[in-house]
Image (cartoon, rainbow, N blue to C red; front, top):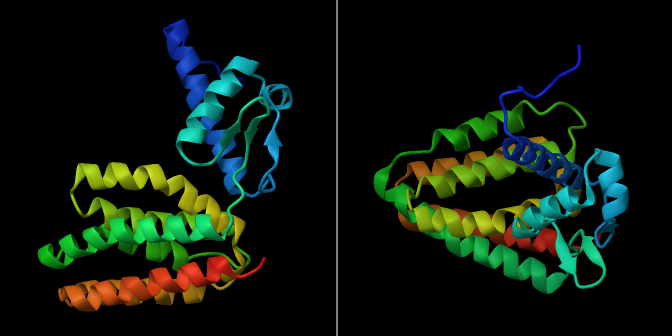
Length: 221
């Protein structure tokens, strides 16, 4: 049986639903590594592949630009970002600054975010040969839960701007994601340090985690 949008939807609502669906679909394709870093997503081809107009594709691409998953080159179109060493250092440094404040708030409150614990369970349940996108999504959920636990809307908003770049960067340079058990151990250690409610202990653990990540990301691919 074919799926149809409810007839009660207005044309504007249909356009909005189509656009949201297209953004999610292209986002997943990017994070699954279907497009090489630096490759262009040509509007005619993408529109044909997804059965939408070129205008709809461009609107979706603009949203993905705002999420850090595409960049727009004047007179050339949209392409997947290609991260250089300076980009890697900059992204990981800013992530550390933002997450560090969230860590401070968690040690004050003593409340370990359930979302972080759930993310570790997802990592633990990863099937053999799990894709980098699968593990990256679990890692993203862990660190997003840490940020959300700050209860700071402005901190959460600032992190959201950076989040797409973080996930894409980690998917593109995924050699260190081959061992899910190591990923679980690293994040369980972070939780144990948060549970001490001693800020210096938790901060040092997260700093080590960020610095180790930065080093791994800077390794030649």
